[in-house]
Image (cartoon, rainbow, N blue to C red; front, side, top):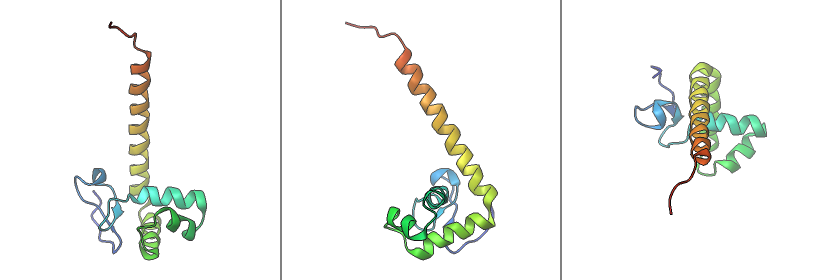
Length: 100
């Protein structure tokens, strides 16, 4: 876990893998960044995260600019987990069915 203090972002062991989330929520910074990258708009990002305030979204984006390596690590970890889950799911579908 990164050892830093940020007004809008926190990292807590056991919450979202210990990766950065919006303070007081379980909203990962990586997801806010991904939506902002897709929409290129604070307003559109706020529509997606209607439970967040503008300052929180801007804070998450500021955090990403300050600590990109931490957020990118979370993105890689999430991507790898998604690929592993898809592979397990595919393997189950390909198993021969037995039974009555």
